[in-house]
Length: 405
Image (cartoon, rainbow, N blue to C red; front, side, top):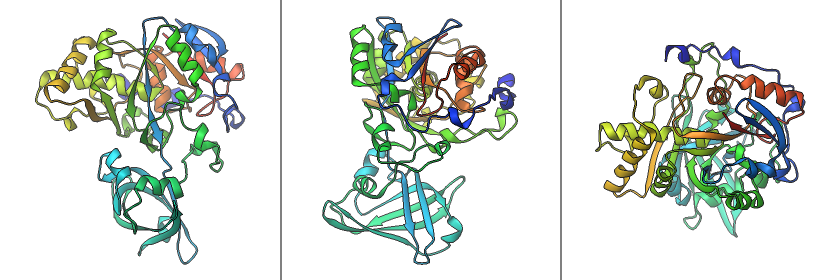
């Protein structure tokens, strides 16, 4: 625990020239390059051949979250442009309810050019399916790292989801250094995205096509899905010298009871697509431990805190923890687990459920790079040096790698 807290983030730096960052995706998703890391050995292939590296009988877990058009722009009468970036629902707090709200709702937001918005409301007039709508934005209060904002509109026939579809802008990653384009509305979503709520895509999934998914089925690997809504914190740089000083962002997860049952049937072992799926799956283990300690615990208190895995000395097998969590859902008549996680996975962490990982190439000095390093027992430089030397494309729209430690 102490060693993990005192990891120096500077030890996880590498040179990443701007021209190695993929600013746009390839025309065909599954033709991206695939780096294959197997037991310390590296080879390369094309992503559409991924299924041939998977062992029959495995269970592959995808994050089915969908990116929302979370950027809203308002222009004051003075001409000042104000950007309101939706982070997570404040009232109602449930994502599904939020997108169906009519007339008004509240969000936790980031605000660009806030100094120009000192008082008064912001308004924007537009058309939704033939309805003339006036959207009003009012500042409520400052919060710890964001702002609470109220939105109201003058037509109860129109939902907030329809408003975002009409005037919201898809928030592509800041390191792309370009404006969002119409094509991003398709290319910055996975083909299996379903549940609206993320402000960033689970980018490891961007390489998959319906053909690759069918080939995965054909090779005897089962597929299932979890939901983790990716927050803007995924881009938050580690500014502290040691990772102990970095506060991980909280992300909300939803996991169907049947998915946990399937994990149990697969001996609590999974192939994770993306770091968000990793964070969700690994958090389930610690939620199971909480249930074992207190069978009547509330869903809200199943939240996994940042350092909890390093402060929890447990010899409980993952299968036992998942069975306890499944039993909890059955006894409380819950078909879906709704909770949250702040877990940080870094060298020193012992993986419980994830045995194979499909992921992209991550930013230098990022928590995602720490997660990968923990998965390969510190051998991340071997992977990244190879990728840099062999023309792999980096970050969200870049190439992929399959890691079998």
